[in-house]
Length: 191
Image 1 (cartoon, rainbow, N blue to C red):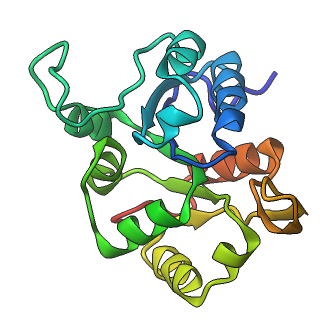
Image 2: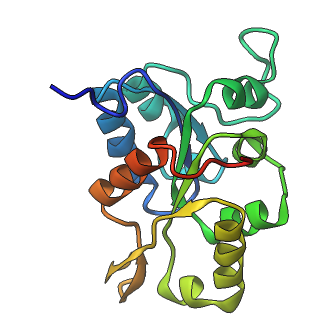
Image 3: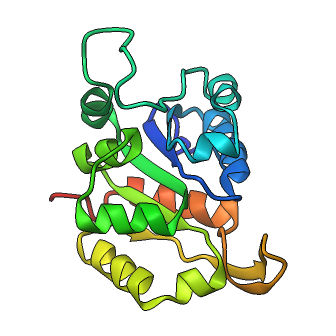
């Protein structure tokens, strides 16, 4: 029987502050069920949608939410994570996160971690369809692709605003498939 591509792999799951943040809980659970070691890094806005405790229970590890929180050991979390991570998934990735990352802004635990990574990064955007179609967001997505980030396009469907359009978080199976492909080593960040 073939080994699961996630088994014994260290994966960071980034969660940003969009309504789709609740779906990240299932993503973390599925990765753990497949044998991955998962560390969740959340933005402060994400904690307004899903409690860090949810991710701590599902991952078996404390969720990182604050860049300046006193560490449990003397090492900077974002640097230590970057050194051992084999993959990072950000789901959902909001317009805010995409803009910060495209501009190299590191002002919280997640963006600082992302800029420290040298492993493949998969971004799964989710937002209102008008935001997704905005030329600024599309320019940021194009820049991130050019820099080697993998983008899992949002899907068309019912959105939290009560409208239908492209902006809904991609199906978790699609995100997991992109993660498997990224672990396959096709293209790595920074080399």
